[in-house]
Amino acid sequence: MKVLVAVASRHGSTREIGQAIAEVLREEGFDVDLADPDDVDAVDPYQAVVLGSAVYVGRWAASARAMVDRCASGLVQRPVWLFSSGPLGFPAVPAQDPDEVPGLVARLGARDHRSFAGRLDAAALGLAERAVVALVRAEEGDFRAWEEVQGWARGIATQLHGEEIRGIRLVR
Image 1 (cartoon, rainbow, N blue to C red):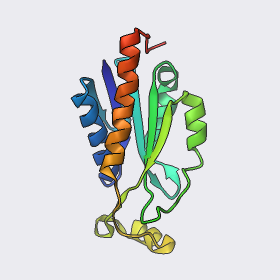
Image 2: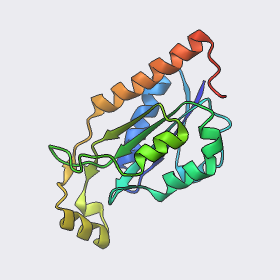
Image 3: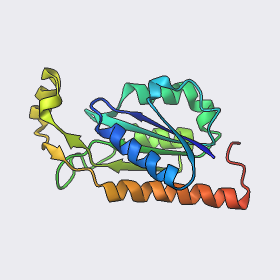
Image 4: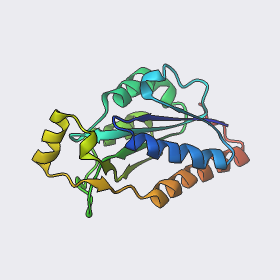
């Protein structure tokens, strides 16, 4: 089964989460492509899709939102999982998902959305980004919980294997 993991990431932290998800799915026997949403024109070659985005100022990245718009008719015909990356600190701030996520889940019939903690390296940010970080008093550091990411990916693999075993046609 061919699976697409598409990830919108500005500084690489969210892409690393996507890489970890893709690695687990590969270990579970799936043929996985990892791509930037801007490089995805159609999802026809895939039987399932995992789409993730970094969250900036409470919103998904424009490239991830554009992929949803561009590929919506194909996405609704196959199993889709969504993830966001961005909360920082302990406890994670912001605690809530981006406002657009419930609409994306409903629009695509996504099986799940998971929000993962992110990483902030202020030295890698531009001037405007550093100003926003200072304004919201975001905590610097790497807060990603790799066991949580890998566990979520294993859950996706379990669902897909279950459908393969039962002979369920994934693409409607």
